[in-house]
Image (cartoon, rainbow, N blue to C red):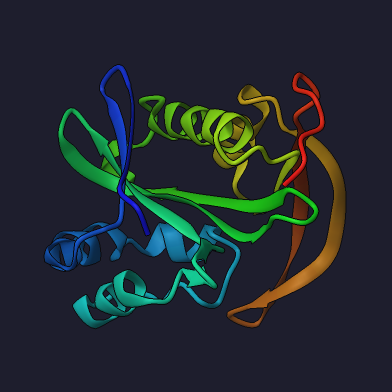
Length: 185
């Protein structure tokens, strides 16, 4: 993966994530509120250094093209979370977007600024047409971030996630980039 550095104001996004960040990343991710609202059983709590190393070292390319781009989010030069694209589909020019911020840094507009950078990068550099994600119904903060960044609600998957013995609705969000001409891949 080639190096990527995006910045806006006090926010910066950087990839690849260095293995030397594993301790700091595990400390940030070891936040029970993330595991309870991220909408995936793949995000463990407690989040260990080994979990961080596995995340950092996972394969993100296929035939020289990234299918996952994960960036560490920094605020005022301090690491605060992760944002990334996954399931990048170059044929259909779409990708899933996901993010999390440690609880100590929420409510400062960091997720919104980071998502704005990823939206711009997705549209102008990757030439994607669509981004999408799902949000647990008990995560209104993430829904506000998405709506501020131009995403729309596309539907609700009723009781589609079973987590800790309870079913959760997943709210589907998407954004279509209509302000650029259709480009060939």
